[in-house]
Length: 115
Image (cartoon, rainbow, N blue to C red; front, side, top):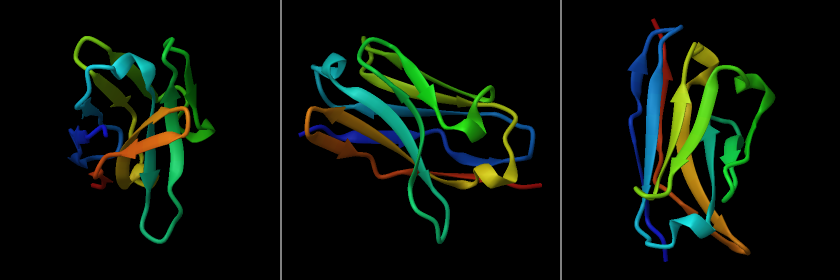
């Protein structure tokens, strides 16, 4: 069992930045592919960004060039740097760890982009 704890959410004005963190309670962090998802009210959860065990990254089209996912294996932590935030980025952001057919989710952190 892996526990994931997200932090770094909050209220930010359009055009601003936030950095989300997701700390994993495991000493085998390197075996997990990590990802960030988000879910806006009344909408399905969607994949925002992913990073493989080897550091290969992928992004949904709407965040390319604005968001950056990274991982620090020494700290068992994955990050999501979000720049040029837009109101449509408002959602609860979730972290996910995946190894083979095992998936673990964090509790989510709220990001609100509003003036």
